Image (cartoon, rainbow, N blue to C red; front, top):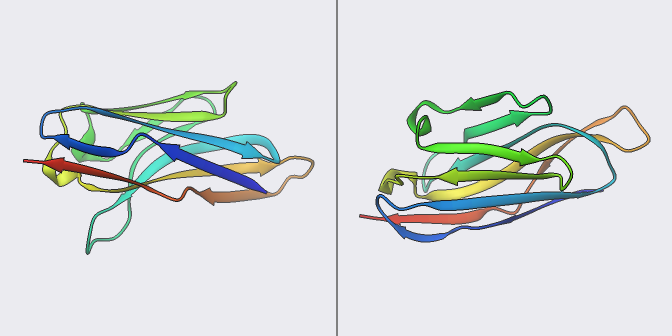
Length: 121
């Protein structure tokens, strides 16, 4: 089993910053990619940003230049630094990881429980 635990959500005024963290634990052989998705009320879940094991990053267009994804390989943790937040960034943010289970060659996709980010205008 692999678990993801998120932290760092909350309420912030427009223009402010938040930092989300997500730590993976369990039977992890290696982590192929970790990322953040978000789902606003009444909308589909969308990719915000992800980072591969090699450090390549990918961002949704609306967050480019404002959000930064990074990782700590030793801690199996991914971070999302969110600056210049806008009301339209309000959503539940979910951590996602694609891992190779320890002792096997099987890929496993794992989701966190979600953390709410609310940006007030």
